[in-house]
Structure formats: structure tokens, C-alpha cells
Amino acid sequence: MPELENPHLVVRKKERLLQVFDGGKLIKTYKIALGFTPRGDKGTEGDGKTPEGEFYVFTKNDKSKFFLSLGLSYPNAEAAERGLREKLISREEYDEILKAVAEKRMPPQKTALGGEIYIHGGGTVYDWTDGCVALPDEEIKELFAAIPTGTTVIIEP
Image (cartoon, helix red, strand yellow):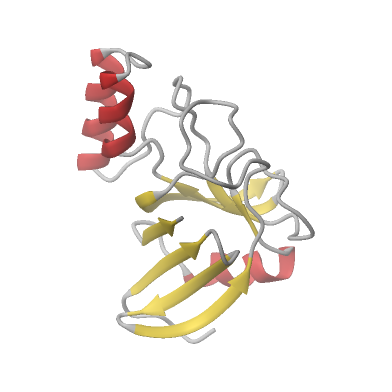
């Protein structure tokens, strides 16, 4: 993959695709696997759904149990607002999530909303993750090298 000046990623859940853009130009498309319950937006920890919305890469993990991984900023502000409204999280957890998002760092990962959502290796034979986005190891290696922390990731239904 060429060096990217202004990268962002778009995950199209229905099509099982991850697209890499540089500015407005599509650079590469990867086939992906999703959570074991692929339809719908993530609601709670353990539901097997891949979240939908806008996120950013908060970390690059080269010691992932799934080869390499890019950590996504879930729960985001929208999930936090829903969680507070539905009494799934406390006001303190809500405030912590919003502060982390405002500072573009890792939001709390152990809430009733779920967390630890990554783009990682492990393969794409079927939808098998707990809510993450999976690629073959060779492809996550290429993506991992090209995508810096802070990169925007849009996950569409």
C-alpha cells in the first residue's frame, strides 16, 4: 500500500468490506469477518455485535492474540448517551467516556456497553469475533503498517 497522507477507514458490515481511503480516494478494499451476531449496532457487553458509527484508532497493538490489532474508540459518545439514557452506565462512566473521546484516547473498556473493539487478524472464513473486525493475518499486517493512531474509522450497517 502506498504511504497515506490523509487516511480513513470505512467498514461496510452488510458487504463484509473494509475500505481504505486517502482523502476522498479509495486505495484498497479488504474482505472482513464481524462479530458472531453481525446484524445491528452493538448494545451491550457480550452481544457479539460489531458497533456502528464513527470511531478513531486509539492504539496499535503488535502483541495481539490475533496477530496485530488496531484499537477502536468504542464506546463512543453516542453509545455513552444511549447507555446513560438506558441506565446501563453511571454518570461517572458517561463522563469518563466523553472525556476520553474529547482527548482522542482510549475510552473505558470494561463497561456494560462493551469495549475492546479492534480491527485484527485471525481470518475471515465466517463471522466469529466478539464484535471486532477481522482480516487475514497478511492483510492486517499491511493495514497495521499503513494506519496511524488517530485515524477515523466509520462503521456502517
